[in-house]
Length: 479
Image (tube, rainbow, N blue to C red; front, top):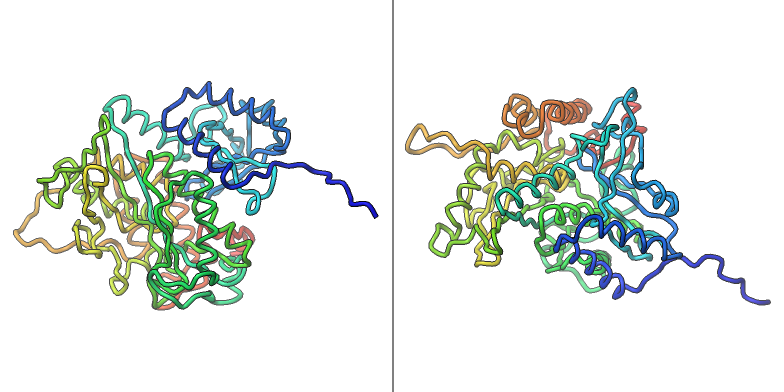
């Protein structure tokens, strides 16, 4: 019997070719090739490459969830200036009576994906959300971060660089977070610890697979390893311009979830999925440069950080309470701020004390930076970076100390306290906008109301079931 002919010939590229293409696209982005030229080049590529069937356009909602819409390639090429979607289906966007929103493709943020994890014949591009009249949608912080960093570049000749150390847990079973209310817990797949995992055990296979995908997508990997907690992982990649870094933070979690799913497992970025062991953090590293010179480095400065770097730190510390809900946006986040597990909950900065909110890593002219340690991995990366940059550069100064030995301030230890501080902050309303700040507070209140008032010592079903990244719409509707 003759072999059946191959009916479909969809794009499937070797990892080396993927890396070459993605590095070229990233270089064009860094070099700021004109957007019109990039749009023309990408659209011509899509038209000529017959093996591509669809384009996945990504956007991020107010809470930080990544949304993906697949557009038929021919339709996208014909209608890229009028891509609409139902905003009322996205929590925190629009009401039913004003549901239509639009997507504007950012042709610079274009990625080729490994087909063994994401399927053949697709590419991914990021998009910004527009209102019905074509103006930027206020709840889309990707567009707001991009506009703000463009302004810093043109008005102050400043470039913001960001990297993130994103921790997660690998747990048994697919969709383990969505099934938490049925199982009552997570099953860890490794009992190892920091840096320890046998070659080819499930945790190491997962880390290796995810790291290979990141390399193919031009993440500029630096190191990857198991973390302190059993079954915990972290994969680090090089700093990048703020908007590129935020896109990569979203892609990092997507990649990890996809690789784990293919292995029959779940990659969880809940801040504290298991009581009694360390939680997940997303340490966010920031530096500023002008004319290629790192403005945060001073060999003679305290902890080798410049005066402008220390001013940036002090402004963030001054607004730490106001921004806590942005950095720690879920009920579960506040379990991580437990001092028994190296929690970075003290509102101060230090080069050595890891319980402080901000650490000053030892650096040189290239690597000097600040590390905001109190960020949980479920924070919206665009909102997070936008808020930290605006605050560090132009936020209010700390009030003068009233006594010679002030007590160490501590971050809120539950979402209700953080929500109260957020809602009464005039500064938050100033940088986010009154309407957006109100929407964000409302979303956090809705999640908090679905959970017990007191955290207690054991994780409650509600803080997992109604977590904004655990997208179980049926449970929300049944509450």
